[in-house]
Image (cartoon, rainbow, N blue to C red; front, side, top):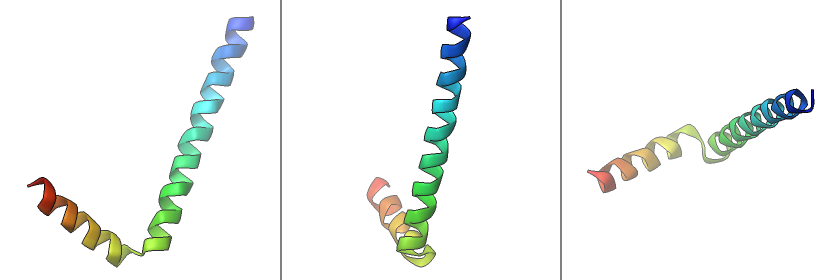
Length: 49
């Protein structure tokens, strides 16, 4: 029973973390703006290639 509780809690924590990451990503998108993000991705691609 205790192990079930632990695994359930672990799932909940993972879901919360994913949600937090999603909110953070959306916030960054809104903060930077899509145009800036495209420029940033372009710069990164140039650096990588």
